[in-house]
Image 1 (cartoon, helix red, strand yellow):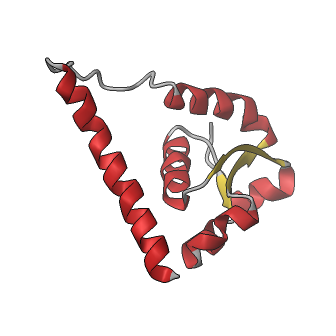
Image 2 (cartoon, helix red, strand yellow):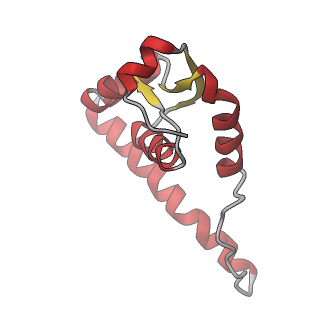
Length: 121
C-alpha cells in the first residue's frame, strides 16, 4: 500500500472511525502500529487530550480513523492486535500466589488515581 500524505487522503476519501480510546497515548501506540503496517490513521481529539486530559470524555474519547478504503482491513488488523494474535507467550509460574501478584500493580494504580482525585478537591 503506497504511502500518501494525510492531507491528500482527506481530499480523496472519507475517513471512517474504527476505534475510540480513553487514553491518548494508547491511541498513539495503536496509530503508530497501524502506520507501520501501511495504513494512514488519524487521531481526532488527540491534541485536546494532550493539552487537558480531563476533557477526553467530554470530547467522546480519542477517535482513531482511517480512509474508507482501508477501514475493513484496518479493523481486522486492530482486532488481531487486541486479540493477542502476536502476543509473546508467558510461561505460567507455579503457585496460585503468582496470579494474585499480577493484579497488585492495578490496585496501586487505582489507589493512586483515587488519591490524586481526592487531593485535588
